[in-house]
Length: 187
Image (tube, rainbow, N blue to C red; front, side, top):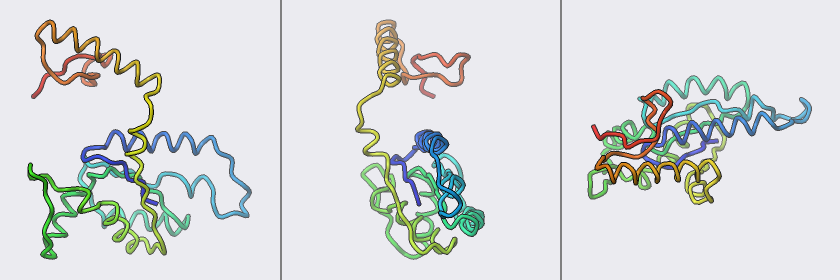
């Protein structure tokens, strides 16, 4: 099962989605060993994020062991994962790589989910695959209390920064002590 989190640079979203999935999984009770599904088989076997270099062959070899043990693998990956590798593969086969007006690879047209489904299935010898594209619906959901507080705090700090003539990208600065919300300088 490939859980595709939509977004070109969606590493954090992908990792957090896998984290919440594991929290949900930990709260579930499973039937006795008579049934083929248990926590280990439903656990996250891989998290692939666009921000890190990706090697499908190495990951496939590692996941083949999980497949042999559990009969399935669960992979969470960001839509932009492995795009460089997918493009190289397409170009090596003489295929045209679709790009938008800015020169970015058109992710919807190269379809990383279908690509990984096809190629990973061969490596791990899966009889069938399922790609779940989870990002679009999740992003359309109503904001929860955490979201509303973060949005409100960012808006207040944004107005303050604008009045003071400070520009930047508004958000929590993870590089500063306490992760303050502030206008983070463009570099």
